[in-house]
Image (cartoon, rainbow, N blue to C red; front, top):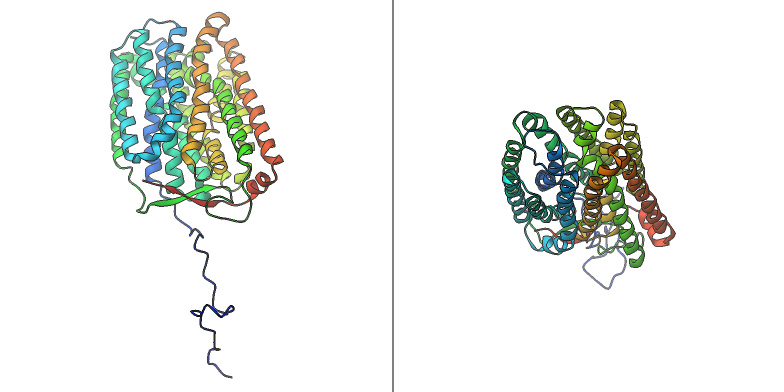
Amino acid sequence: MDSSPPQQLPSSDPSLGKSPAPVPPPANAAPARRSHWGRLVATVVVTVAAVTPGLMVPALAAPVPGAPHLTGTAFGAAVTCFFACTAAGAPAARRIVPRLPVRAVLGAVSLLTAAVFAGLAVAGQQWQLCLLLALAGLGNAFTQPVAARVIAADIAPGRHSFAGGLFGASLGAGPFLPGLLVTLVGAPYGWRPALWTAAGLALLTLVAAALARPAGAGPAVADAGLPGDAAGSPTAAAPAPRTVGRIVVAWSAAAALATIGNNVGAAYFIQIGAASGFSAATAGTLQMLASVLGIAVRLASGGLADRAPHRIPRTVAVMMLTGAVGLAVIVVGTPAAFVAGALLAVAGGWGWTGLLLAATMRLLPGESARAGAAMQGGLFAGAAVGPLSFGVLSGHLGIPMTVGIAAAGPLLGTLLLTAGIRALAKDPAGRAAADAPHAPAAVRAD
Protein backbone atom coordinates (compact mmCIF):
# COMPACT_ATOMS: atom_id res chain seq x y z
CA MET A 1 0.00 0.00 0.00
CA ASP A 2 1.28 3.41 -0.89
CA SER A 3 1.81 5.27 2.38
CA SER A 4 2.74 8.54 0.80
CA PRO A 5 0.34 11.35 1.59
CA PRO A 6 -2.07 12.28 -1.17
CA GLN A 7 -1.32 15.39 -3.10
CA GLN A 8 -3.27 18.44 -2.00
CA LEU A 9 -4.00 21.59 -3.82
CA PRO A 10 -1.95 24.52 -2.55
CA SER A 11 -3.99 26.51 -0.07
CA SER A 12 -2.17 29.69 -0.97
CA ASP A 13 -3.59 29.79 -4.47
CA PRO A 14 -6.83 31.77 -4.36
CA SER A 15 -7.87 30.54 -7.78
CA LEU A 16 -8.39 27.01 -6.54
CA GLY A 17 -11.74 26.84 -4.85
CA LYS A 18 -11.65 23.43 -3.14
CA SER A 19 -9.08 21.87 -0.89
CA PRO A 20 -9.15 19.03 1.62
CA ALA A 21 -7.15 21.15 4.04
CA PRO A 22 -8.94 22.02 7.28
CA VAL A 23 -10.92 25.21 7.11
CA PRO A 24 -9.77 27.69 9.76
CA PRO A 25 -12.42 29.00 12.15
CA PRO A 26 -14.04 32.33 11.32
CA ALA A 27 -12.14 35.38 12.45
CA ASN A 28 -15.01 36.50 14.64
CA ALA A 29 -15.39 33.18 16.46
CA ALA A 30 -14.83 33.82 20.14
CA PRO A 31 -12.48 31.35 21.85
CA ALA A 32 -13.57 29.83 25.08
CA ARG A 33 -12.31 31.93 27.94
CA ARG A 34 -11.85 31.35 31.61
CA SER A 35 -13.65 33.22 34.33
CA HIS A 36 -11.63 35.54 36.57
CA TRP A 37 -13.40 36.20 39.85
CA GLY A 38 -11.06 38.61 41.64
CA ARG A 39 -12.62 41.91 40.57
CA LEU A 40 -16.15 40.60 41.08
CA VAL A 41 -15.36 39.51 44.63
CA ALA A 42 -13.87 42.96 45.30
CA THR A 43 -17.02 44.56 43.87
CA VAL A 44 -19.18 42.41 46.15
CA VAL A 45 -17.18 43.43 49.23
CA VAL A 46 -17.51 47.13 48.41
CA THR A 47 -21.22 46.74 47.60
CA VAL A 48 -21.93 45.13 50.98
CA ALA A 49 -20.48 48.22 52.65
CA ALA A 50 -22.23 50.63 50.27
CA VAL A 51 -25.72 49.22 50.84
CA THR A 52 -25.36 48.90 54.62
CA PRO A 53 -26.18 52.55 55.55
CA GLY A 54 -29.65 52.20 54.07
CA LEU A 55 -30.31 49.06 56.12
CA MET A 56 -28.53 50.14 59.29
CA VAL A 57 -30.27 53.42 59.98
CA PRO A 58 -33.75 51.83 60.28
CA ALA A 59 -32.33 49.79 63.14
CA LEU A 60 -31.63 53.08 64.94
CA ALA A 61 -35.34 53.02 65.78
CA ALA A 62 -34.89 49.74 67.64
CA PRO A 63 -34.84 49.89 71.47
CA VAL A 64 -31.06 50.12 71.95
CA PRO A 65 -29.04 52.66 73.95
CA GLY A 66 -28.21 55.98 72.35
CA ALA A 67 -30.71 55.76 69.49
CA PRO A 68 -31.88 59.20 68.26
CA HIS A 69 -35.30 60.22 69.52
CA LEU A 70 -37.04 60.38 66.16
CA THR A 71 -40.36 59.05 64.99
CA GLY A 72 -40.73 56.09 62.66
CA THR A 73 -41.77 58.49 59.90
CA ALA A 74 -38.58 60.49 60.40
CA PHE A 75 -36.46 57.39 60.10
CA GLY A 76 -38.43 56.33 57.04
CA ALA A 77 -37.87 59.68 55.37
CA ALA A 78 -34.11 59.44 56.00
CA VAL A 79 -33.86 55.94 54.57
CA THR A 80 -35.98 56.99 51.60
CA CYS A 81 -33.29 59.56 50.78
CA PHE A 82 -30.75 56.75 50.50
CA PHE A 83 -32.76 54.58 48.14
CA ALA A 84 -34.17 57.49 46.13
CA CYS A 85 -30.69 58.90 45.48
CA THR A 86 -29.49 55.45 44.45
CA ALA A 87 -32.29 55.21 41.91
CA ALA A 88 -31.81 58.80 40.72
CA GLY A 89 -28.06 58.34 40.37
CA ALA A 90 -28.29 55.14 38.31
CA PRO A 91 -28.56 56.90 34.88
CA ALA A 92 -25.49 59.03 35.59
CA ALA A 93 -23.60 56.00 36.91
CA ARG A 94 -24.43 54.14 33.71
CA ARG A 95 -22.57 56.81 31.69
CA ILE A 96 -19.68 57.35 34.10
CA VAL A 97 -18.76 53.77 34.94
CA PRO A 98 -17.56 52.75 31.45
CA ARG A 99 -15.21 55.76 31.35
CA LEU A 100 -13.34 55.11 34.62
CA PRO A 101 -11.18 52.27 35.91
CA VAL A 102 -13.05 49.83 38.11
CA ARG A 103 -10.60 50.34 40.96
CA ALA A 104 -11.17 54.10 40.93
CA VAL A 105 -14.95 53.73 41.15
CA LEU A 106 -14.80 51.12 43.93
CA GLY A 107 -12.26 53.15 45.89
CA ALA A 108 -14.40 56.28 45.74
CA VAL A 109 -17.47 54.33 46.90
CA SER A 110 -15.51 52.85 49.83
CA LEU A 111 -14.26 56.24 50.99
CA LEU A 112 -17.68 57.84 50.70
CA THR A 113 -19.32 55.02 52.67
CA ALA A 114 -16.77 55.27 55.48
CA ALA A 115 -17.28 59.04 55.65
CA VAL A 116 -21.06 58.62 55.81
CA PHE A 117 -20.84 56.17 58.72
CA ALA A 118 -18.53 58.53 60.57
CA GLY A 119 -21.01 61.36 59.98
CA LEU A 120 -23.92 59.24 61.20
CA ALA A 121 -21.99 58.46 64.38
CA VAL A 122 -22.01 62.16 65.34
CA ALA A 123 -25.37 63.12 63.82
CA GLY A 124 -28.56 63.30 65.80
CA GLN A 125 -31.05 65.32 63.78
CA GLN A 126 -33.29 64.27 60.94
CA TRP A 127 -31.85 66.62 58.31
CA GLN A 128 -28.37 65.32 59.05
CA LEU A 129 -29.49 61.74 58.59
CA CYS A 130 -31.23 62.64 55.34
CA LEU A 131 -28.20 64.45 53.93
CA LEU A 132 -25.73 61.73 54.85
CA LEU A 133 -27.92 58.94 53.51
CA ALA A 134 -28.48 60.87 50.28
CA LEU A 135 -24.70 60.98 49.78
CA ALA A 136 -24.43 57.28 50.57
CA GLY A 137 -27.19 56.55 48.05
CA LEU A 138 -25.33 58.37 45.29
CA GLY A 139 -22.27 56.24 45.98
CA ASN A 140 -24.32 53.07 46.06
CA ALA A 141 -25.73 53.91 42.61
CA PHE A 142 -22.38 53.01 41.05
CA THR A 143 -22.15 49.48 42.42
CA GLN A 144 -24.53 47.61 40.12
CA PRO A 145 -23.29 49.14 36.83
CA VAL A 146 -19.74 48.30 37.95
CA ALA A 147 -20.77 44.75 38.77
CA ALA A 148 -22.44 44.29 35.38
CA ARG A 149 -19.35 45.63 33.65
CA VAL A 150 -17.04 43.32 35.60
CA ILE A 151 -19.25 40.30 34.94
CA ALA A 152 -19.23 41.07 31.21
CA ALA A 153 -15.46 41.58 31.17
CA ASP A 154 -14.16 38.88 33.50
CA ILE A 155 -16.71 36.06 33.64
CA ALA A 156 -17.32 33.46 30.96
CA PRO A 157 -20.84 33.69 29.50
CA GLY A 158 -21.79 30.26 30.80
CA ARG A 159 -21.22 31.44 34.38
CA HIS A 160 -23.09 34.74 34.25
CA SER A 161 -26.05 33.55 36.32
CA PHE A 162 -23.78 32.34 39.10
CA ALA A 163 -21.85 35.61 38.88
CA GLY A 164 -25.13 37.53 39.12
CA GLY A 165 -26.04 35.42 42.14
CA LEU A 166 -22.69 36.20 43.71
CA PHE A 167 -23.28 39.91 43.26
CA GLY A 168 -26.86 39.50 44.47
CA ALA A 169 -25.36 37.95 47.59
CA SER A 170 -23.99 41.39 48.41
CA LEU A 171 -27.57 42.60 48.79
CA GLY A 172 -28.32 39.46 50.79
CA ALA A 173 -25.36 40.22 53.02
CA GLY A 174 -26.60 43.78 53.51
CA PRO A 175 -28.81 42.89 56.50
CA PHE A 176 -26.01 40.80 58.03
CA LEU A 177 -23.82 43.69 59.17
CA PRO A 178 -26.62 45.67 60.88
CA GLY A 179 -27.77 42.50 62.63
CA LEU A 180 -24.23 41.75 63.75
CA LEU A 181 -23.62 45.28 65.02
CA VAL A 182 -26.97 45.42 66.83
CA THR A 183 -26.23 42.15 68.61
CA LEU A 184 -22.56 42.67 69.49
CA VAL A 185 -22.16 46.45 69.74
CA GLY A 186 -25.47 48.32 69.62
CA ALA A 187 -27.38 46.44 72.34
CA PRO A 188 -24.61 46.51 75.00
CA TYR A 189 -22.79 49.75 74.16
CA GLY A 190 -25.14 51.96 72.12
CA TRP A 191 -25.53 53.03 68.52
CA ARG A 192 -22.72 55.52 68.20
CA PRO A 193 -20.02 52.89 68.88
CA ALA A 194 -21.82 50.62 66.42
CA LEU A 195 -21.68 53.29 63.71
CA TRP A 196 -18.00 54.01 64.38
CA THR A 197 -17.35 50.28 64.02
CA ALA A 198 -19.19 50.29 60.71
CA ALA A 199 -17.05 53.21 59.55
CA GLY A 200 -13.90 51.25 60.32
CA LEU A 201 -15.19 48.21 58.43
CA ALA A 202 -16.06 50.39 55.45
CA LEU A 203 -12.49 51.71 55.38
CA LEU A 204 -11.21 48.15 55.19
CA THR A 205 -13.02 47.70 51.88
CA LEU A 206 -10.45 50.05 50.36
CA VAL A 207 -8.11 47.05 50.36
CA ALA A 208 -10.53 45.13 48.17
CA ALA A 209 -10.91 48.13 45.85
CA ALA A 210 -7.13 48.43 45.49
CA LEU A 211 -6.86 44.76 44.55
CA ALA A 212 -9.56 45.00 41.84
CA ARG A 213 -7.17 44.80 38.91
CA PRO A 214 -8.17 43.76 35.38
CA ALA A 215 -7.98 40.03 34.74
CA GLY A 216 -5.86 40.49 31.61
CA ALA A 217 -4.63 42.97 29.05
CA GLY A 218 -6.46 43.81 25.89
CA PRO A 219 -8.80 46.51 24.66
CA ALA A 220 -11.88 44.36 24.57
CA VAL A 221 -13.31 41.25 26.14
CA ALA A 222 -16.43 39.22 25.61
CA ASP A 223 -19.77 40.21 26.90
CA ALA A 224 -22.64 37.76 27.05
CA GLY A 225 -25.80 38.30 25.18
CA LEU A 226 -28.37 36.70 23.01
CA PRO A 227 -27.21 35.35 19.66
CA GLY A 228 -27.31 37.68 16.74
CA ASP A 229 -25.40 40.43 18.50
CA ALA A 230 -22.25 42.26 17.55
CA ALA A 231 -20.29 39.02 17.36
CA GLY A 232 -22.17 38.15 14.23
CA SER A 233 -23.59 34.86 15.46
CA PRO A 234 -26.13 33.71 12.89
CA THR A 235 -27.85 31.11 15.09
CA ALA A 236 -30.80 33.32 15.93
CA ALA A 237 -31.93 36.85 15.41
CA ALA A 238 -32.16 39.22 18.34
CA PRO A 239 -35.60 40.41 19.44
CA ALA A 240 -36.83 43.67 17.99
CA PRO A 241 -35.33 46.68 19.80
CA ARG A 242 -38.81 47.97 20.63
CA THR A 243 -39.68 44.61 22.22
CA VAL A 244 -36.44 44.58 24.19
CA GLY A 245 -37.04 48.13 25.42
CA ARG A 246 -40.54 47.30 26.62
CA ILE A 247 -39.36 44.16 28.40
CA VAL A 248 -36.52 45.98 30.15
CA VAL A 249 -38.96 48.64 31.35
CA ALA A 250 -41.43 45.98 32.52
CA TRP A 251 -38.76 44.04 34.37
CA SER A 252 -37.38 47.19 35.97
CA ALA A 253 -40.87 48.13 37.14
CA ALA A 254 -41.39 44.57 38.42
CA ALA A 255 -38.17 44.87 40.41
CA ALA A 256 -39.42 48.16 41.87
CA LEU A 257 -42.78 46.71 42.93
CA ALA A 258 -41.24 43.60 44.45
CA THR A 259 -38.65 45.66 46.29
CA ILE A 260 -41.32 47.84 47.92
CA GLY A 261 -42.42 44.85 49.95
CA ASN A 262 -39.17 42.96 50.32
CA ASN A 263 -37.30 46.04 51.48
CA VAL A 264 -39.75 46.39 54.36
CA GLY A 265 -38.81 42.91 55.53
CA ALA A 266 -35.08 43.57 55.19
CA ALA A 267 -34.77 47.17 56.40
CA TYR A 268 -37.24 46.86 59.29
CA PHE A 269 -36.42 43.29 60.24
CA ILE A 270 -35.49 44.15 63.84
CA GLN A 271 -38.53 46.36 64.41
CA ILE A 272 -40.89 43.75 62.99
CA GLY A 273 -39.20 41.10 65.09
CA ALA A 274 -39.62 43.22 68.21
CA ALA A 275 -43.32 43.64 67.42
CA SER A 276 -43.58 39.85 67.11
CA GLY A 277 -42.22 39.29 70.61
CA PHE A 278 -38.42 39.16 70.20
CA SER A 279 -35.80 41.35 71.87
CA ALA A 280 -33.62 43.59 69.71
CA ALA A 281 -30.59 41.33 70.24
CA THR A 282 -32.54 38.18 69.31
CA ALA A 283 -34.06 39.87 66.26
CA GLY A 284 -30.56 40.94 65.23
CA THR A 285 -29.36 37.35 65.47
CA LEU A 286 -32.30 36.18 63.37
CA GLN A 287 -31.49 38.88 60.82
CA MET A 288 -27.97 37.50 60.52
CA LEU A 289 -29.30 33.97 60.00
CA ALA A 290 -31.76 35.15 57.34
CA SER A 291 -28.95 37.02 55.63
CA VAL A 292 -26.72 33.92 55.53
CA LEU A 293 -29.60 31.88 54.12
CA GLY A 294 -30.22 34.60 51.54
CA ILE A 295 -26.59 34.42 50.42
CA ALA A 296 -26.83 30.64 50.04
CA VAL A 297 -30.05 30.93 48.03
CA ARG A 298 -28.49 33.44 45.63
CA LEU A 299 -25.39 31.36 45.01
CA ALA A 300 -27.30 28.10 44.60
CA SER A 301 -29.96 29.57 42.32
CA GLY A 302 -27.31 31.30 40.21
CA GLY A 303 -25.35 28.09 39.74
CA LEU A 304 -28.48 26.16 38.76
CA ALA A 305 -29.69 28.90 36.41
CA ASP A 306 -26.52 28.63 34.31
CA ARG A 307 -27.73 25.19 33.24
CA ALA A 308 -30.92 26.63 31.74
CA PRO A 309 -30.51 30.40 31.17
CA HIS A 310 -33.79 30.70 29.27
CA ARG A 311 -35.69 29.77 32.44
CA ILE A 312 -34.19 32.53 34.58
CA PRO A 313 -37.13 34.98 34.28
CA ARG A 314 -39.59 32.28 35.37
CA THR A 315 -37.36 31.46 38.34
CA VAL A 316 -37.35 35.13 39.29
CA ALA A 317 -41.16 35.20 39.17
CA VAL A 318 -41.36 32.23 41.54
CA MET A 319 -38.96 33.88 43.97
CA MET A 320 -40.90 37.14 43.93
CA LEU A 321 -44.05 35.18 44.75
CA THR A 322 -42.17 33.52 47.61
CA GLY A 323 -41.44 36.95 49.05
CA ALA A 324 -45.13 37.85 48.96
CA VAL A 325 -46.03 34.64 50.79
CA GLY A 326 -43.37 35.27 53.42
CA LEU A 327 -44.67 38.76 54.19
CA ALA A 328 -48.21 37.42 54.40
CA VAL A 329 -47.10 34.82 56.96
CA ILE A 330 -45.52 37.51 59.17
CA VAL A 331 -48.93 39.15 59.53
CA VAL A 332 -49.98 36.33 61.88
CA GLY A 333 -47.90 38.12 64.51
CA THR A 334 -46.52 35.15 66.47
CA PRO A 335 -42.79 34.48 66.97
CA ALA A 336 -42.99 31.26 64.95
CA ALA A 337 -44.79 33.02 62.11
CA PHE A 338 -42.20 35.78 62.10
CA VAL A 339 -39.31 33.31 61.83
CA ALA A 340 -40.95 31.38 58.99
CA GLY A 341 -42.19 34.43 57.13
CA ALA A 342 -38.99 36.43 57.53
CA LEU A 343 -36.87 33.58 56.20
CA LEU A 344 -39.11 33.33 53.14
CA ALA A 345 -39.22 37.10 52.60
CA VAL A 346 -35.53 37.88 53.12
CA ALA A 347 -33.95 34.68 51.79
CA GLY A 348 -36.34 33.63 49.02
CA GLY A 349 -38.01 36.94 48.28
CA TRP A 350 -34.69 38.76 47.89
CA GLY A 351 -32.88 35.94 46.09
CA TRP A 352 -33.88 37.02 42.58
CA THR A 353 -31.87 40.25 42.28
CA GLY A 354 -28.73 38.74 40.73
CA LEU A 355 -30.73 36.46 38.44
CA LEU A 356 -32.76 39.35 37.05
CA LEU A 357 -29.52 41.21 36.34
CA ALA A 358 -28.20 38.18 34.42
CA ALA A 359 -31.45 37.90 32.44
CA THR A 360 -31.34 41.60 31.55
CA MET A 361 -27.73 41.31 30.42
CA ARG A 362 -28.85 38.60 27.99
CA LEU A 363 -31.43 40.98 26.59
CA LEU A 364 -28.86 43.79 26.20
CA PRO A 365 -25.70 42.19 24.73
CA GLY A 366 -22.71 44.47 24.82
CA GLU A 367 -24.55 46.97 27.07
CA SER A 368 -23.73 45.65 30.52
CA ALA A 369 -23.72 49.10 32.17
CA ARG A 370 -27.19 49.81 30.76
CA ALA A 371 -28.45 46.48 32.09
CA GLY A 372 -26.98 47.18 35.52
CA ALA A 373 -28.38 50.70 35.64
CA ALA A 374 -31.85 49.53 34.60
CA MET A 375 -32.00 47.00 37.41
CA GLN A 376 -30.38 49.42 39.86
CA GLY A 377 -33.00 52.05 39.07
CA GLY A 378 -35.86 49.61 39.51
CA LEU A 379 -34.59 48.03 42.70
CA PHE A 380 -33.88 51.25 44.52
CA ALA A 381 -36.88 53.16 43.22
CA GLY A 382 -39.00 50.54 44.94
CA ALA A 383 -36.76 50.59 47.97
CA ALA A 384 -37.28 54.34 48.24
CA VAL A 385 -41.04 53.90 48.58
CA GLY A 386 -40.91 51.18 51.23
CA PRO A 387 -39.28 52.90 54.23
CA LEU A 388 -41.32 56.12 54.21
CA SER A 389 -44.61 54.33 53.57
CA PHE A 390 -43.80 51.81 56.30
CA GLY A 391 -43.11 54.59 58.79
CA VAL A 392 -46.36 56.39 57.96
CA LEU A 393 -48.62 53.34 57.75
CA SER A 394 -47.22 51.50 60.76
CA GLY A 395 -47.92 54.55 62.93
CA HIS A 396 -51.61 54.43 61.99
CA LEU A 397 -52.30 50.77 61.21
CA GLY A 398 -49.70 48.92 63.24
CA ILE A 399 -46.77 46.85 62.05
CA PRO A 400 -48.65 43.58 61.22
CA MET A 401 -51.20 45.31 58.99
CA THR A 402 -48.49 47.36 57.27
CA VAL A 403 -46.48 44.21 56.50
CA GLY A 404 -49.62 42.67 55.01
CA ILE A 405 -50.05 45.66 52.70
CA ALA A 406 -46.38 45.40 51.72
CA ALA A 407 -46.99 41.84 50.52
CA ALA A 408 -48.93 43.28 47.56
CA GLY A 409 -45.68 44.68 46.13
CA PRO A 410 -43.91 41.42 45.22
CA LEU A 411 -47.24 39.95 44.11
CA LEU A 412 -47.74 42.76 41.59
CA GLY A 413 -44.09 42.48 40.59
CA THR A 414 -44.62 38.81 39.78
CA LEU A 415 -47.52 39.66 37.49
CA LEU A 416 -45.58 42.39 35.67
CA LEU A 417 -42.51 40.18 35.24
CA THR A 418 -44.73 37.47 33.79
CA ALA A 419 -46.15 40.00 31.32
CA GLY A 420 -42.61 40.74 30.14
CA ILE A 421 -41.90 37.03 29.73
CA ARG A 422 -45.00 36.66 27.57
CA ALA A 423 -44.03 39.66 25.45
CA LEU A 424 -40.65 38.03 24.77
CA ALA A 425 -42.35 34.75 23.87
CA LYS A 426 -44.62 36.49 21.35
CA ASP A 427 -41.61 37.93 19.48
CA PRO A 428 -40.48 35.15 17.08
CA ALA A 429 -36.85 36.26 17.15
CA GLY A 430 -36.97 36.72 20.90
CA ARG A 431 -38.39 33.22 21.38
CA ALA A 432 -35.61 31.69 19.29
CA ALA A 433 -32.93 33.78 20.94
CA ALA A 434 -34.08 32.93 24.44
CA ASP A 435 -33.52 29.23 23.75
CA ALA A 436 -30.15 29.67 22.02
CA PRO A 437 -26.73 29.54 23.70
CA HIS A 438 -24.74 32.57 24.69
CA ALA A 439 -22.71 34.47 22.13
CA PRO A 440 -20.01 37.02 22.90
CA ALA A 441 -19.91 40.66 21.98
CA ALA A 442 -17.00 43.04 22.35
CA VAL A 443 -17.06 45.48 25.23
CA ARG A 444 -14.42 47.63 26.87
CA ALA A 445 -12.86 46.24 30.06
CA ASP A 446 -10.54 48.80 31.64
